[in-house]
Amino acid sequence: TNELISATKKQAQYLALQNQINPHFLYNSLEGIRGEAITAGLNSVAQMAEALGTFFRYTISNVENLVTLEDELTNIENYYFIQQYRFGERLNLSIEYDCDKAEVLKYRLPKLTLQPIVENSIFHGIERKMGKGHVCIRIETTPKRLIVTISDDGLGMKEDRLRELNEKLNTQSFDYVKS
Image (cartoon, rainbow, N blue to C red):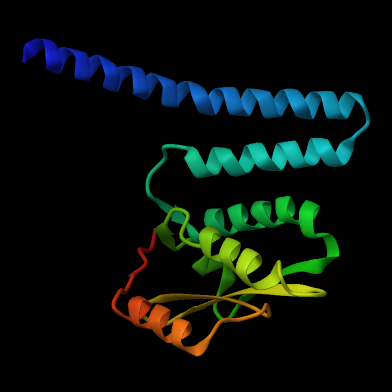
């Protein structure tokens, strides 16, 4: 059993090392693509490679789980920039504040809370819609809560599916932490 434990430990160390190398390979590759694009005068390709590198760096970096709302919204804006290469003028994003913007941007929330919801709005709401689509992020607070509402003017969903999702959401509550 000592040999089995030793082999398992070595495999875990190898996987940990592999997971450290892969992000560096990704960043270096994207930086190489960016450099080649700049040399060739392809500025839009260079900007997209840079945005993709920044997005992945934020997504897979091993920093603390709680991030500021400002960091989370910066990641959303970077994600939106990347999506504009695909959707162009068809996609619009706005962020609205019903509170003190400077204060609320310091609030902390779990990392990658918002981006998957924005991604769902784009791909399940806007992508199949004819014409332009709009995703809106609305930020407001109560004395004890940060309320972030993400909405879109996409295709929507059936009433029973909406009711099912709302029931799941209503059973969970997330408090924010001030920095």
